[in-house]
Length: 339
Image (cartoon, rainbow, N blue to C red; front, side):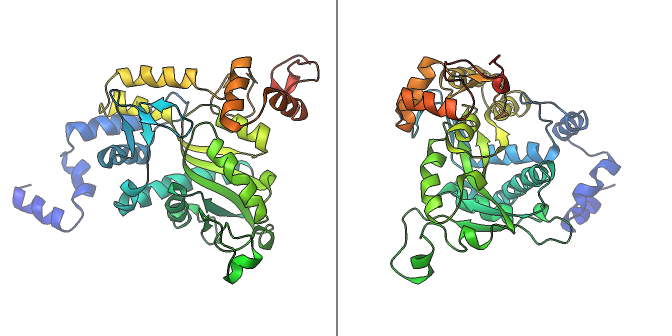
């Protein structure tokens, strides 16, 4: 096939579909296809699919996740980290990547809804500010269509409460749109955010959502990126959030960027591991399931008290009330103990 014919095919938008037939895959594309066909397993146990591989590549190109060993970033908790998840204007200024990100969230939510056998329509609540556009992108994704059902619904959450005029006078003023009590039977409420670390940001928003009629035990949390610091366990035990659903885990992203795409230096994996182990809110056997065995050390209780403004005595009482420990401080069988 000569170059003139190839250019003609490319101009008609079907060049990519013919590449495998005419043997014109690049070596990079062949390597990617080989890895995808083998079902490459990531540190979390998740299998890297072609769509996720391509999305992570596009994220790196526009700077969604930043790594800087020389100038660590300041975090909300007061700590510093060499890694920072933005997913704000990077996505709003590249709407094709935003749509692909919404598809990734939607695929994850669809699996979650199927696993828990919930046929209700997802109602996505975008936490300010990064979660707003993610909630809309996921709700508009065709990946969340289930049978004859229409796509998911979504709503924004205001940063400042509105109570002065309009419908907000009767609805609490935090969530833009339908109040929770109006649609409990039809929807499953899911908070959407760009990332979770300690869980402090989500915890801060729960009382405000309760003002609008939402129940904390009726909320799930879906995060684009999980920093793997034990937030899922913290939110479930102390704030009764049922499920924390992670689209990507930070260890997986680092593995892809270091070993597959080769856009981060090799030491990034070790730096990330040190950060995770030294800054976990709750230490667990696994970072990916909130129901796994875990223990809470005195140092971790101190950390929790600093981050979440609770005394160690209040944390101890919460753990007893949640059935994690007995009154005499023994770990219960449900959480891997013998009591």
